[in-house]
Image (cartoon, rainbow, N blue to C red; front, side, top):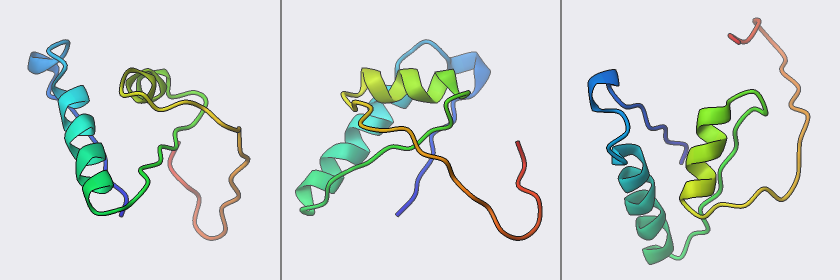
Length: 72
């Protein structure tokens, strides 16, 4: 199940997003699931959060999209 984390600018740099990721990761493990993370190479904030939460890059992918143009 995809999820996302966004922090109100007034509350950034308090590690709230990291706490959410840790909770979601623990919940996934508790249900016998393996959490994964995907982020565009250009999304440095997402990649930094993933690494801070203990995720490690295992490969780079090219994603193809069919249909209406995807927002960038």
